[in-house]
Image (cartoon, rainbow, N blue to C red):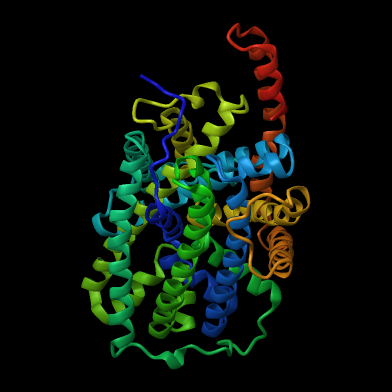
Length: 480
């Protein structure tokens, strides 16, 4: 039996879990090393974390005002139809599918597999084929043992989320409690250990060089991956009780919590490892900064502990991302702007076909490249749309001045203006500092242009041939 109506069953507590669960993943353990390599100063690394947290908070507050007015399943896809038009909304939804959310799932699953491999040590698979590539972008056989493990994880979590929304959200809550316990264990024992030295955190660079604005932006690209994911709660807006009030509150509570945790845990890492050590970890490529930090005061047992914690964290974040990300494609399919089968729900009121399509593409992206390539590509793409959502605050204040607003963004119009300006700067900086990732992201997003016209033509034909759809309803659907 299938149905076409999602159930409103998530309260504020689970909204906060979805927000935090979509954010805290791999970045909290891995991104301090590339940031240190870029800035060469532990003090500036912390500043980059703070700046990224502030911008993320400002963006989240702007998103919360828009969500308070327009909350429904699909998140920004629904918002953009009201703010801009169907074409822009579709391009966002298609970007989620081709780059933003599916690549996030792939990156999280990939790091999970890397961590599991560091504990179990999978035998290499087809090492002779590791250098085979397509355009020096697609390396399907490199680290094939890790990639196949990541694919298996995506398949399992996708299946779990077909069992219903409360199953997926409940699993996220259980994992999140374990993650917080583990992270605070690192903070407490790390800062109190004899290996910790807060004097390691200095603004001066290791080689007395000058920290450039471009370097700060590039380092923040890594930090933003760690903060990425808070907007995903909007994708399940149609399944949240009192969504217009609970989404803004959930976003604010979740972001404040994550900023506090990130500052504490990264201060711990930087007190335990020098900038030079972090540079070496980054250059090796197959090491994780958090593992080496805990190893410094707990030895090999500590390395094992943090590896298990990374497994649990990435498992939780990957599950939360899979859980929330399939909803926009469902919303698009309901309007004929995605593959028709995706609009069907199973007997658990879960968008099973949407989850399946998402899972297949995420598995293909796992085969494409490395963790850092995937995450830089995601952040470049997502900040284009963060800027568009924030611009929507200004547009909606003009278009819908009398609409009920459960939440109004603090600091208007200065805060939204700062977010828009920052998004533009980050996008242009990424084009120059990470041109390969930017080009791949743009190409994947632009495949949405021909797909939009194909879906639109196909939907128009189905409207005229479906005897159960009268002309007035068909016209209404086309105008949405």
